Length: 287
Image (cartoon, rainbow, N blue to C red):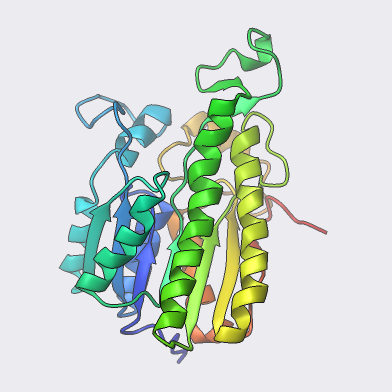
């Protein structure tokens, strides 16, 4: 029997309020291993609420899930006897990052495992506004605003989260730590989501630098790059098209990603650091 060595560890997972999301699945997976789980979340202003009637998965359904509190995830974990707490904060505001770690320490103690899963998304393209290719209400032409919206959370906040984690880790003289950052398998170049992809690519670079610099202190830093995962946004029509592009012939489920994240935090991954793992059924196979 494999013992991942996670029981009793304190795990901070950002962006884990969507009940159908990767963050929520990861929180449940860690709780099942006996970890103390702290969930961060943030609800977008003016996003649709559950009062909006939708028939199934798609952009509107996804936005509703993203705008929920963490209560559903907390309840699911507690019903199984898990230890969990949550706090809401906008990570695009740097001042909230140290406060988030403070909240975790008040409830559970210092963070052992950091999972940077929270993401901001604004689709953008280099095609000029008004062209047929951008006649999509979710996509605009690249601008300072679209760039900053994506980078503030997907890149800058992740860097600051890792820096805060390292500062507290070294201050208390710890010798065991794990950081797992969630990217996308489109980070190397993402048409229609140019700034989103670029912000994730920058995050991957930060992760490799952190792996080199923090390794001597006992901290591993790795990246998971999911392929298409049904977190509530994939319509049946989209899913049918995506299946044909995936060698394993199905879209991912949040648990598929959560299991890999738990592995990277486990004792079994103790000699892995600075690695980028594509988890997408073969959707992307880098050379």
